[in-house]
Every structure is written in C-alpha cells, then in structure tokens.
Amino acid sequence: MKIRVGVFFGGKSVEHEVSVITGLQAFNHIDREKYEPIPIYITKDGKFYIGEKIGVIENYRNIPALLKDSTQVIPINDDGCKFLRYPMKKFGDNVMAQIDVALPAVHGTNVEDGAFQGFLQTLGVPYASCDVLSSAVGMDKYVMKTVFKDNDIPVLPCVVTNIKEYTKNPDEIVAKIEAKTTYPVIIKPVNLGSSVGIRKAKNREELIEALEYGFTFAIRVLVENAVTQLKEINCSVLGDYEDAEASECEEPVANDEILSYQDKYVSGSKSGGGKSGMASLKRKIPADISPEMREEIRTLAVKAFKCLGCSGVARIDFMLDMAENKIYLNEINTIPGSLSFYLWEPMGVKYSQLLDRMITLAFKRERENKSISFSFDTNILENITLGGAKGAKGTKM
Image 1 (cartoon, rainbow, N blue to C red):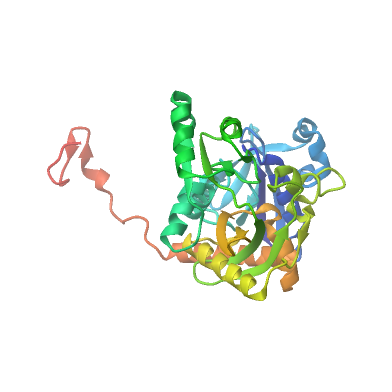
Image 2: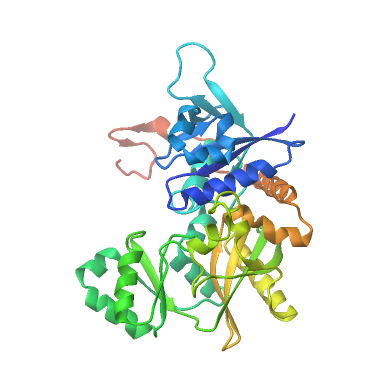
C-alpha cells in the first residue's frame, strides 16, 4: 500500500502565491511508485480544499472558479489524519481523504513560523519539515541572530524597532538607529521571507521611507549595516539534529543591489513567474568562490541547521563582505522556495529523492517522539472540585 502524502500549500501569508508554486512542484515530482500525493490548498482565509483540479497550477489563474469545482474539507484526528467534507452531508461518507504524513510547502507568517507545524502536531500527523521551535526561531530574524551569535555563528549586528514605539516617537527611534548603524543600511521586516518589504537606505530620508514601508508588512522591523561589496551565497542542508549534509552553493544574480521578490519569482520566468518559482532565478551554480570559501560556508550551514534543531530541508543564506573577506549568515529558510531542489541536483540528488528523504526523516522523528513521555498515567482531576483539590499541597484552586 502506498504512503499517502498530504502536500500543503497556500495559507494566510504574503508569500501565498510562492507557496502554491513550491507545493505544486513537490506534488508533481513525488515518486508515484511509492507515494500517493494529495494536494491540499489552504486559502488566504485559512480554509482547506482538495480535488482533482487543486493539483494543476493553471487553475490558480481563477481561484474562485477553482474553489467552486473543489471540495472544502476540515482535518480531524480520528485514528489518523482524515479530511471531512464541509459542510457535512447527512447521509453518505463524509471522509474525503486521509493522509499518513504531511509535506508542508508553505512560506511566511502564520504557516512557516511554527503555527502550522503546531497544528499538524496537534493532529498527530508526521510532517516533513522543521518542528515548531526551529520554525519559529528561523522565522524571527532578530531571535535567529541572537541564537546564532550565542553559538559563534557570524551575523551582522542590528537594531529592532516596532510600529508602536516608532509611531509614538519617530525622531527618537531614527536617532537610535543612526547611533548604532552607519549608512547605507538595510531595513527588513523581522518575520517575512522572499525579500518582501526589504529596502536599502543611504540617508535619513530614505530610512524613514523604508521604515514606514516595512511597517506595512510587519509590526517589527530590523535595521542593519549594508555590506557594500556584497556577494550573496546560498546553501541548502538536508537532515536532522543527528546527521545533516550540505548541498552545492549558489550565487544568486540580482537586477539591483538587493535580491528582490521580483528577481526571485517574476523576472526569471518567461511566463511571468508561473511554474518555476525559485528554480527560475538567475544564479551561478556552483558559486564563483574559492574551494576553501565553499567548504567554510557549507560547514557553517550545517552548524546553523543543527544549532536550531532543524529537520528536513532548509536553505541558509550568507553574505560575503568582499572588502573585508568576511562571511555573515543572513538568514535561514526553514521551508525554502522550491524546497531548494536545484541545489541538490548538482550533488546527484533528484527532486524525487530529496522528497523521499524528507518524508523518511518525518517518520524517523515520529518514531523518536513516541519513545518520549508527554503525559502521566494518573488523573489528578479525579480529586478536584471547584472548591479545591485534595492532596494538591493544601492549596485552593
């Protein structure tokens, strides 16, 4: 019997469309000899849909029509993860699908940040991605930097502010930023990916514009010194806390000083971004760096991956300061665009093999979790009344 894999994509995120591309790429490349993939689309308001047309990317040109021809479902934990028709019918079988393992192909806030991983964990279904904690830390750029810095992984220093304190006293916040940084600076939302909301500022006027722009996407923004002689290098890592390996390194080619959302998902595709996702980005593979630099980056990538306790596949993005010959870790993507399959192909790993190893890791973690005690075979509630609890150290409830 084939293993039923729920491929989840979409969600309430500004990276919604990017997620659809990643999800359908994975759905189309999974090994049908071993797995039965089930595409599960999450709308921008958090509803789940399944159906034959959900797995065809051309249908997303008209999403209202697609949803009309598909079935809304709700997931439940009932002797496995099942999906019930919603609203349910009075007669007949309402179970529309059942999965054995989940493959999250979601990006951005509300889905990649640990929220969706926690939802899957509550449903009791194994999932092929980072766990709740590593997903949450990886999404928050400030927390991520703090953890990496504490583990001797080089990161740029930064200043973080939020929309409330900025609105209350913008001049004070700008002065604080200028005291701790030097122009030019990079301004970015703390918890977004895909280069959404990122701006570069060369003076105070541009800084103020960039802060206000960033606050349209997130409550908190981060400001750090810009690397003026910059070379960006990305490396993927596959594995878990016990064993992990690094992919080939890539050097993305930007049309501007900053690798933008446009560079990543639109300009590289003849069809205007459609089917290729991150795989369509202009890049050099392998990256134009020395063998020594390549190995140092790959070693740092694995160290960062294990430091956060990641699992499955992630992509770690680095910045090379060519003037100072220094490496800085920029960010980690716990569910990278296109699942970084294009970085594994040069290593002899096909996309279907990458997905197979991710699913294998999901089942490994599930087996390990089953060996851990999460509750006790006692029920202290047996002796509890609204007035107090017997034997509860004499305290009142």
